[in-house]
Amino acid sequence: MDKHILLEERRLHNLIFRNMRLCDAENNQPLSYRLRGMIIGYLCEHDGEDVYQKDLESEFFVRGSTMTESLAQLEEDGYIERRQAERDRRLKCVVATEKAKDIHARFAERVKEWEKRLVDGIDPEELAIYFKVVDKLCSNMEAEKQ
Image (cartoon, rainbow, N blue to C red; front, side):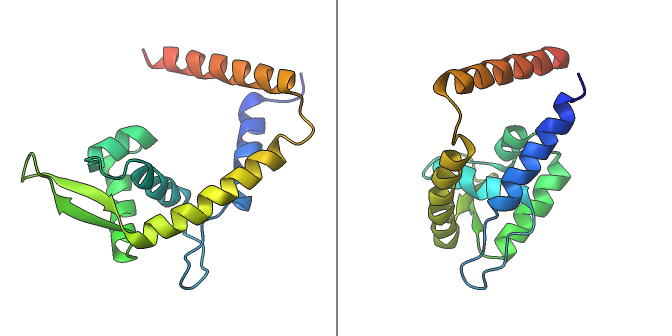
């Protein structure tokens, strides 16, 4: 086989994220790093729940220093706030602001559009095989961690 899974996955990943950049509504500038967009999405989808930095680190498989830097930039740009947790005053919850919720809503519409474009011309049976293979690949990688 001339193709390699890791290279092809990387190519698809890059093409998707190049076309789906989140842009700041005020200045139409893209958020500079993909992780920040994913953090906004996660916080908006878990609105009303207590979300802590450690939760985000484990969700996105990143080190504490990486998450600290991303959260600091998001806070500086007005996308998140850190609030004292109700159950433990020593902890800070990470919360999406209205600015983040606005950009997330716009992005959710783009995701729907891109999902349609991605699967254009692909039969449901082919899609089922794709998901089955991806699940097996993920299972293999998860088994490696153990």
